[in-house]
Image 1: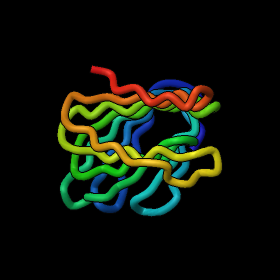
Image 2: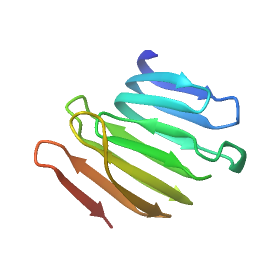
Image 3: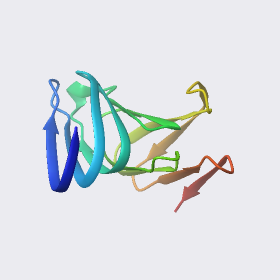
Image 4: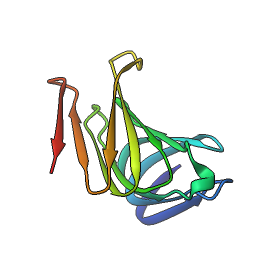
Length: 123
């Protein structure tokens, strides 16, 4: 989905609600998985949608029944903010293979800078 300006909302089968701040480029891969190529989004994921995933170029966010925000830039920089609950951030290498996993709790944020392979936890 490419959106020019404003806000866009998408509700998934299991009840996850994604709100995009546009411009954004967002694709739905399956009923429980999407990709944010560029832009900013927030998601509210009920317990029944446990395992909902949103991927960026260098991070795959696995939701465990939370509220979170995600920012993605085309070159791979990404940031995830957990507003409430628990997230797993799977960091990906250049080929898209999982490199490592970080758990993030309420009020935690992490940012990945792929050009320097730096992962920063932001208080």
